Amino acid sequence: MKRLHGTLVVALWLSATAAWGAAKDSDAPRKTGEQRNYPIDLYEEPTVEEVAPTGEWENLSEGLHCSWANRNEHYRRHRVPDLTETAATTISAWRGERANVEAVLFSKSDQGRLSVRMTPLKRNGKGMNWRCAKARFLNYVITDDGRGCGNHDFRLRPWLVPDVIDQNRPKEVHACETRPVWCIIEVPRDMAPGMYTCKMEVTNERGKVVKALELNVKVNAHRLPKREDRKFHLDLWQQPYSVSRYYGAERWSREHVEALRPYLKALGEAGQSVVTTILFYEPWGEQSHDKFSPMVQTTRKSDGTWQFDFSIFDKYVRLCAEYGIDRQINCYSMVTWDMKFRYFDEASGQDIDWPLTVGSDDYKSLWNDFLRAFRTHLEQRGWFEKTCIAMDERSETQMLAAYEIIKANGFKMALAGNYHASLNDKLYDYCVALAQGRKFTEAEREYRRANHLVTTVYTCCTESEPNIFSNSLPAEAAFLPIHIAANGLDGYLHWSWINWDEHPLTDTRFRKFGAGDTYCYYPGNRSSVRFERLVEGIHQFEKIQLLRQEKASDHEWLQALERLLEDCRNHAVAGTECAAKVDRLEQFLNAE
Image (cartoon, rainbow, N blue to C red; front, side, top):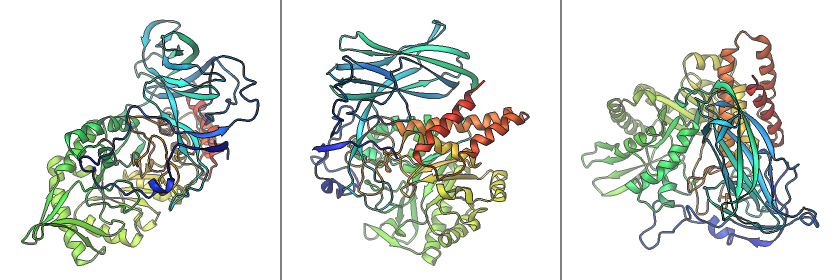
């Protein structure tokens, strides 16, 4: 597979990897005076030095070079881009679609502080100015070739990947350096179909345009459905506590809520379907840098009865709903990874971690009391019908035992885990590993469709490719929703979206798992190439659903679509194969 490392010299930005790799997990913000000030708006990019082949930059002509580029490539920071310089390009997009295009700047001499911007879109050079495009520099971040589960191997050679879509800030373009630019065009739903033109302009510190690239945008007559009407089921698990720690805010304080808002807005705009809520302390053990506090305070009163405070749960559900994340609420977990359930004991004044076994008398007693109170609360809020009691990677035996309690209390049930035929008719939301998506028989898929059940797949550390690691090729993220459409499934889940550690803007490696597995969205409300490509793939999924209905009687078209989808049906696809598959399908779907 094509990868991004060159010859390393001696320098790494990071200090000893063992020191931060073993950093203590965060349970809450540090005490006053001990709290770390994490970079949010301004920060220095990391460096991993490499030496370009002799003469590579010397053979480049003088001045600033600026060209449209291939969004399927990771361009090395200290290498001359391998491309034919192009000053004009054309893309196609539906109304309501978010389209991506990439450019690169490079020079063998210092070019000073430059800025990038997109001009308004115009049709035939006149008419209304559509200010719907933006250009942002891509920042480089450290990754390596690590993929897989378990502890991360920090002996692997680090390299730089251009993944961080920076804020709207100027950038120094240094000698013998490549600087990618990511351009996003948010095509308005009410834009008339036709060909539009705009420019990506590069300006110097005086505001003078020093380079410009022409972009033609062919706007299709079709419209993507409004966000609330889309079919794709996106379930990126949220980690609100990484935000509170990173922003130095007390958990669920006003400052914490305000810090969360831009991230939830971005997630909602991407089409997120599910609110991730936590019922008991830390359902997942040691796999995140920040521990998950419960959103329900469970107290055992002195008389032995239970009391449940749902105020934080309510606050978070309502906050997510403000940004359109309100289709489903998944509540973790009745079957935690260590099978301990923390409650506050009124008699002793202490938190107690209560070890339980699924199906035991104590387990049944706790959960029957909890679910009865929870149901009453949800019904009062009008949320009961969209709430699932959710588990992650638990055994068939545990799931069946928990199901009996959940069923008796009238709740829906969700699982992200292995495929088991015995669970097919019991789970409202059944998400299996990418490699298991095709284990559902046609009869099982039809049963789930007919009963309006949600059937999805996930990637995590076990799937080498395609995936959304920081070292994944960009088209892998776009391929995933297309693969899901090809197999008649409903959506995609990833266990982490913003599970930041101590240095998320500079180094995507964590003490566990493959590089970048713990987040794909950066502090400072910075998106990433892999996140934007995932959204791109989701939009192709929506096009497939709409066009299948529209062209139901066009058998020739349907056969052509089926041939393209057949090429995307197998999950065992190398990252290097994804770009061609995605590009062919997108070209077909955008044709008029």
